[in-house]
Amino acid sequence: MKVEKVKYALWAADWQRCLKFYHELFGGEVTMQSEVWSEIVIENAIIGIHGGGEGKRTWTGLSFQLDDLREGIRRLNECGGELTREPTDTAEDPLHLAMCIDPDGNEFMMTQKRG
Image 1 (cartoon, rainbow, N blue to C red):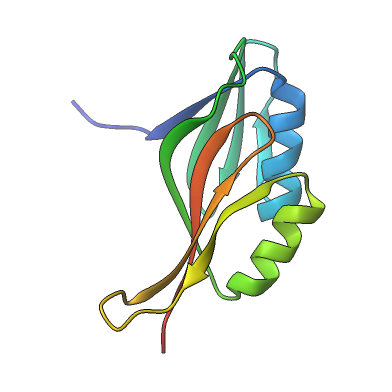
Image 2 (image 1 turned 90 degrees about the horizontal axis):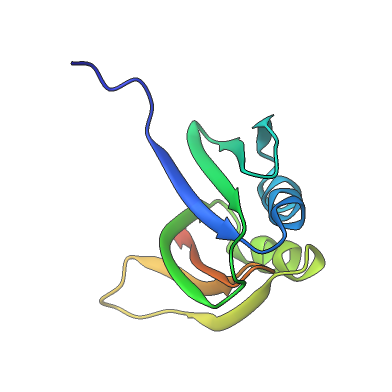
């Protein structure tokens, strides 16, 4: 057996809005679109968006490491997302970390490597 692809699925009440959000925020390539299942590729990671979600706030476990977290936060707001926790700088944490939410309630992190 050979694994061909790994995909991460998100549920969205408005699949088109969700797809547009990730495309505009991270510049991903939309490779498939439908009401049932859409896919966007961001830095070789495939995010599937499944329509029919309830729009409830849900932790996803997704994390996007950026080269400029402040710019990412600015773009997050422009694209309709929300910052739920400002990035913090601590001696123990090697990454700057911002907690975010997309317009469909999916929570994710944006980080920037320190140093």
